[in-house]
Image 1 (spheres, rainbow, N blue to C red):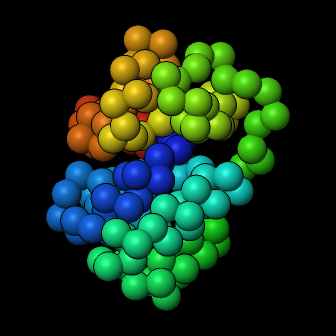
Image 2: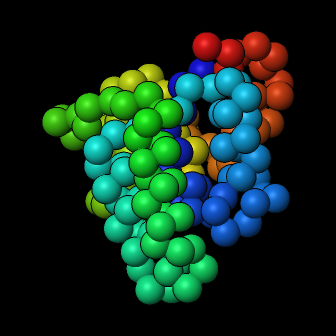
Length: 142
């Protein structure tokens, strides 16, 4: 299985190492799914990690290391040029939908705008994604 993690999931994993977002990163490291990243996703992650409220909890060097780690270890995909088949109420999320759709990947997010699209797209909360991986033994193996 292939998945795109919304930057909010990655940030949540950094802030709460025991929660479902962190568990999602751990199962990726175990090889249970292929993590897709793109230049826009990594750029959004880097920008979000630079917000003052996050800088208080995540050191700049750690933030830089996380972005570079994902760049080096995730599967890099090109950002799609075409609009997504379904649009989010938040246009800033459309690139994530387009990326997941173009790569035939699940989208994992904690964003209610995206989670509201589950009837039209394979969008999962981190908890629901972990359950999906558990229900489908071997489905996530590359």
